[in-house]
Image 1 (cartoon, helix red, strand yellow):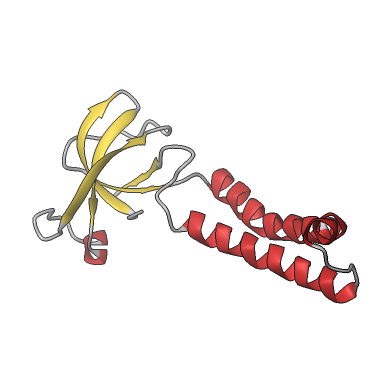
Image 2 (tube, helix red, strand yellow):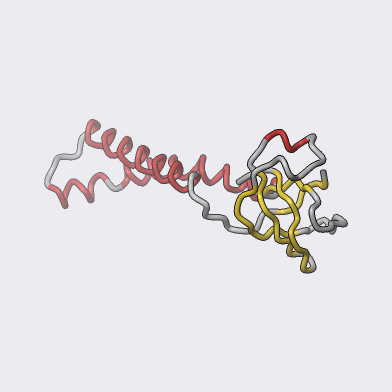
Length: 137
């Protein structure tokens, strides 16, 4: 997601914005020099007084970022423990012996798979909430 956007329309707390595709727009007062991306909606939870063509900074709340960070940290750890605990079941199902090497391999496989899942999900446009208006530029 881009950090800066131009306000297109306002409907209560829902604001339709168009993302700016230039980092130079932070200090610029003209909106004609930036390339414009697709439009999407953000929430104005802070009730910042906005009008059309305002340049705003957008993002997700720190609480949501913190929760998602903790999930991305603990998900691979929990998956590794699950890989360790599931080794006897998988050994019976796929006919291999349970020893420390097979348990280490299962921990590694589950860890790498969960890290790959976290990586792929973090690169998608899946969001659990709308971004917020953080600041009027």
